[in-house]
Image (cartoon, rainbow, N blue to C red):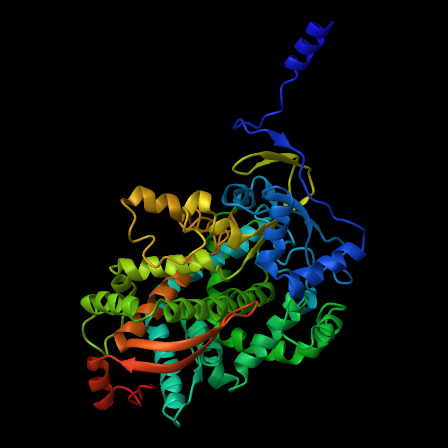
Length: 525
């Protein structure tokens, strides 16, 4: 009898995934409805912070990186806070597989902003890749990005000069002065975005100096349920930002003014899209996009996707430069000036392509601090999600969530220094295959860095422009300056970077004295 029982037990084989990993039940719990999501929101925003919120739960469940957790905003803004979190590089890949996840309405996770904020239309970013309207809209965005790519470098050069002329003026204003980069970046990046995408009069001229504030206000009305540490004390922030939706009518006038501006500067894009829809083959034009809907999508593309992204991304670039110090500054300056020796000339996209350390620095910034930290998608069918050590069954309709900084800092992919900023990580690769392997896990654009946006996938159509802007920022900085000193204050959305000194390059100082720049920097001790 004992022998038969032993044989029966031996016949019971553990369930394995297609890759041979043991299939386990997803650990974690959603707790008590209402009360547990509310407590978890407080942990996430105030008591732990996002990264510790996840790391503490990974530790609690023995290192498992696929977990059941609640995600903000929770009560009273979200009907269902429950997600399956994928928190390592391997399991995160499920969110990039459009055949396995549906991304309809999941951009902001467990809540959806009012369509009144978008002129009554659902923007492209909220559509699933299988939606016919997605292909029709994204076709326009891909063509626009390709057609305007050659405007990126000259437009950025203008914005960079305006930004750092203003920074230098503040530093030179009095002894001990400092200059916050973020406020200048906020203003001039909106002008840059519109110049690069559409040309024409910049919003600071067409709308006025308040254009960037209007754009930021519109973004805030969409994303306030996910904001934290914007208002003090936190109890007041909970009441004002996390208890009810801010009514769209409060931003209606600002949005109307922004929309009128884009209707003017993007008129050529709208006209071309209508003509192209008529010229495309019948299958491609099966779902025509009304002009008004396309206009509101262009507003979303310019302000939410592009401007909002640069507003977050560039302070991170400058943050890591500030923390890297003068030794790396000297290496970057030498590389930049070897390619672009003369001040006053425009740095081109082909120029920065010849700068391996600059390229590596920007990829490393996007790896460590992706502009959008979250990805969501709903399982299209019952599926098995594999982490490095186990596999987990996810049911159709469950909402999957990925916290990208944990995935892109995974030490199982990026080695024992995966959680550190290594400026030359991608330049120091032994060969192109190793570099490509690492870049496949740099997924800030809703796809691998080695991939490309298509009409049917969810990868960002402006991916190449974002990378180019990061490279141009580093190249312009070290063409103009030898080094700089800045303080960094971390915050939930973007770090606040404040310059305390800028040291002009000798050639740049001579050019400034000759009149190529409005001011010569004063070096602060």
